[in-house]
Length: 435
Image (tube, rainbow, N blue to C red; front, side, top):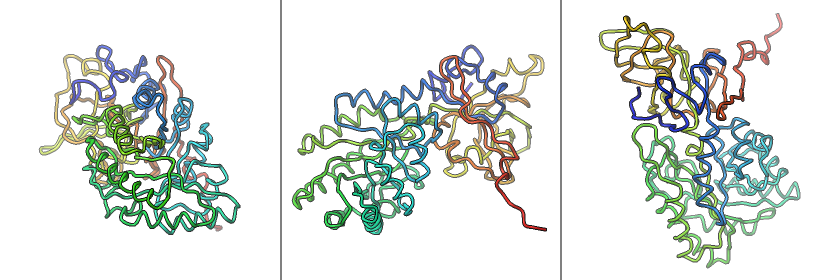
């Protein structure tokens, strides 16, 4: 049925006989009820991913801040807030979303290289846990705005340790050539500057080296460099309250072997204790690993084109719905929602062929999967796996295509957590010139 033995989101996405299920709900029924393309999330999968972090952190001084850039639907954020998560935000809009979903301001860390004045003011007024400062210019601006508002801004410097996370170059963030963070070689000087600036309170150090990381060594290498920096800061009488190792743990898209959070956390805490920094609060900012395999994108085959050199399955989802394949050359599993025997006449069964799964957008880059052996007929339903992270949240309206609906499944219950946009909504706020 799939390129893999079991769905990437198993056991929450699984087959019951020949039917793909989201927990206890048939994906075919979801498509019939809500239409396609359609994002479907499993609440149980979200909870299981959350527990993979929460359990090894029991009775430890730690805070998990969901990297909400991975998936910012209010219902998803609401669940994590209720389970005790903090949030890693990168914009004023994400701040508003997190607060709307019930986040406690003192569990929000504000990252990002280009914070604008209004965003800094909003975060100060909300009372966020800290700003992860990424440049000396930003530090000076936060000091100025905090002083004007007669507030004190808690800051943590995001340090760039020049560590190769061995991931896709677009999602590598810890190398000296990346735009993120402050070079570790000058970090102590910037901390000294922060210590004398008005309106600034130093609270921590932050490091984030990339995303979709499947090896522990880059984390430990970066942590070793952070601990050396802490030794230097201690010599300057600069004391911190927390250490933030970022997020970036990978998931299984194809044949990856993800790192279990507990394995990484045990090694991190051991290193902190060994170096005398066990008193620091540990912060993590996982995103993809909390939501990636908790979602699928359901799409319907519109047309089949069989050429001498290439076969195309043209579906109703497109690059505007799921950008990762064309942006990153990313691999997503493709599952038939129902077996071929359920969707075709037994005497007229479709022939299995190698297909490229492509969308209707007028770009050659509009593809979701390439070279997949599938037995397809027109109107068949397909599920694009591992779409819970950087799926809907990166979607757009190119070609004046309405963004699709999002549904949350909870056991045998379904909840429409975002209705499908209408075409009229796409230009409702636009204004034509006077005649």
